[in-house]
Length: 128
Image (cartoon, rainbow, N blue to C red; front, side):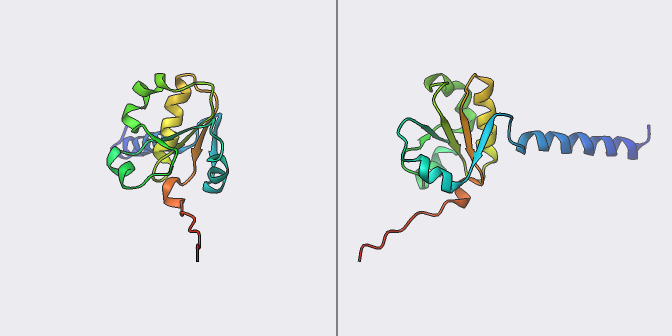
């Protein structure tokens, strides 16, 4: 096999692995920030922010609990598997990965915020 063929197959494998990471998992809902605004009113939903504690402390949406992606497996046992769980990150990619990890642990009702906090614009209320 030539070096060019090896490079070609390596690039196909790499592209496949990237797609597996970024594509939504089967059975994981992808919601918009507008959907999220409506769901924030529902106190029965578990809201999880998977960014680092430093990023979370800079800004987060009220009601979201910080569980960094690197800790999601360990912290999953503290969450209800049957309760709707909405996950957010900065861009949506790590949130999607967190949903996949939770699904593998038996969570049944998962949603990732498509685009993450990068698409969130706080509502400013004019009080004048």
